[in-house]
Length: 351
Image (tube, rainbow, N blue to C red):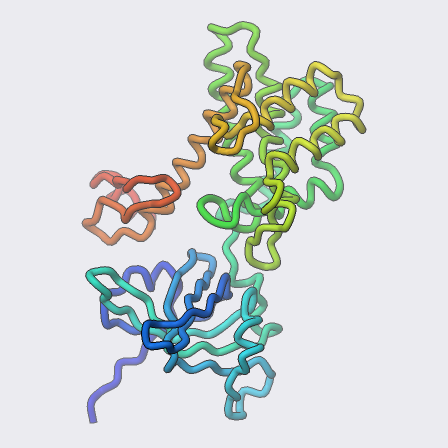
């Protein structure tokens, strides 16, 4: 009899390094599932799954198996999932077996069997991505940045980040996709923007003496506060109804206005920081109601854009194989990214 090579358990990053005709299996959480019909009228599904290493889009054809292992009894033969169970898989953990295919010169991932796992034994939170930086480290950086400000701004920021608002901020994603779309992503992104913006402010203050570094810090920390209302994570990042119809900028300014009034923030600081929140996307076509018009707003907008682009670079090149240096086209950034040979070598040394 021919020898059958067992398929080892894989993660998303491993799967993306496979070649056509190679098989894979693994355990993932379902991000999305959309039923469609092929040209012959047969149903198929487009499915997105994720783990702590990333997300994967795949096809599930009509001959795939859908199985139920959600009960603790693993000895019994699994039942087939009902249509209702299939439609409610989003946010649940599934076991996947699949194969890589070559479709018109592009790699395509096909799932051949999908098994609903026991959600207590395989909790979804265990299979979703989160910041690579430990949460205690992120919180310590947040406290240090707040403490660097003068008393009026420091006390206001402490009032914002204490209690329920702070807890929501520290757990929220920064997006549903594109950048920092994972637990603690909002905190990680906001701190990176603040670090960059403060460094720019410290540099330019020798030229522009009126530049207020503390306003830069406050605006950078708060620029995306609306995302705690625009997105949820249960356990995967999802957009909320207010996020879809109002967007995080409007939600963030409304929350800031309320918090500033409760803290009796001076009208001048309220106006300066509020302007940063409303202008941080830099252009009206990108969602900003107004354009950055102050030194502080220009700096925060630039830092926000930089952190987004750098994350896109990292996301695009992370799955390149040794010897590859140009990424696939990154639609969010509207470009291909280049990882130089020197960077490739440093990345390999760090693994």
